Length: 462
Length: 137
Image 1 (tube, rainbow over the protein chains, first blue to last red):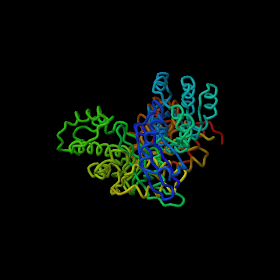
Image 2: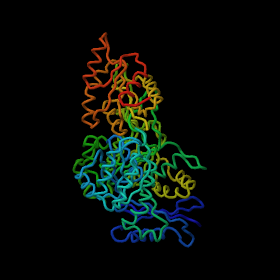
Image 3: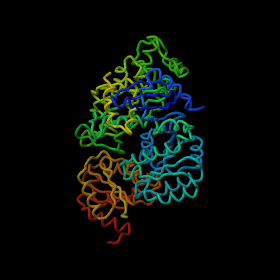
Image 4: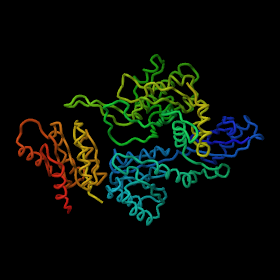
């Protein structure tokens, strides 16, 4: 039987998913610890041994072996723009959509001090933007010159003012800095264009970053490490929502991924105002939007979650806990491999998951504000209106292994106490129970129709 | 490439019709119009002008609070590095029966280069802008 082997080299685990391509079924999944420090293939082989116990390899022919990766710190990026709310924000969104982890966002003309800081952060890729097409050139040229001076071996993606491209190309060529030039992330004011930059970031990831992170050896066995893991999730989300040439999609959706260190939210939705008489303001939102909350997580970021939420907010979800919230969060951060078994521990983890979901959703969705004017109250919206989104999907270990994923995800719904946040009113709550979203994003590269049909089968009601 | 102007309605003012007419008129006259729409803060005008390297900022105000909304715009432009950018204002800038010459004087003192009373046709502003930017017809 023809099958596909899909691999996710995660920061902690290397996860394998074997898919029967003929019957469109998941054959088996297996995981083992990622071993990027020594040889990435050790962890892979350990996981593969486990997979062999579950399926008879003599009957399976792996015609595709595709991988994504967030190992060795993931894809670390710096975004540079001109005005913080405009091109710097557009550059940040492009990098997030490409699956990056943002180390820093810089704006206006950079200083030498900032440049030194950027070098110290050791990014994998720097995204340089600034100016609309035909707009400001001075700032991006200044920044390109500083980059030429300070950066030796970090690839640069140039996605700024079209009119400055030739000069920047010369500056970076003269300094022998590897770079690729693509379309402006904000060609006209408030209009964003993140897809070309995302694609170039992915190209560089495949050409350069995989090797730089010591994962080249894996490519001897597999067909290729195609993208960072979050980009694969976003790709899967897009296919599932929009459908393919042959298969219909399920419509607008939101994916919440709660991890130990971060909480990611992906939305595939236009986000136009759903009510009449609302003025939409600010920078245009990407149709496929990803946000990452580095301070909201279940383990590594448990203390920062407590700091961001506060004890009262956590207690709202677990009012009768015997634990002191602060102490408990410190304990969880110190014991990142802790798996809750006792009732109290499970309840506390669920509460943290709910707070992470609630806050990550608040930061992802748009905000509506009433403005009092001489003409009466006027409503103005910044960000995406997701009130009518039909599906809220949970993924990630915390949700997949939870006995009560629906309860955790419900914290992401519209809350009448905070009606300004345009969170979904009545979404159907689904769970990625086999944990296949990133694998399906990979499969969709070659077999989009199969990927969407498998997702429809395995992503089920909570 | 034509000169770039940032156009918008300042403050809590949502009068959208005149804004669209001005966008059309200035575009037809050959300007690259960056229309930031209604209900814009001073900061939005300034950010837009920085990113687009604009030559002028055209501020509309129709609801009578224009003077309060416009105060400090020139100082903020100076602070943001938009040195000598042209600032125009027009619409129904103030309420009540006030002498136009007084209103104009106050706006000029606030750093506006040109100020227009209610009912001014767009052509007047277009001609002034061409003159101020040294554009030959």
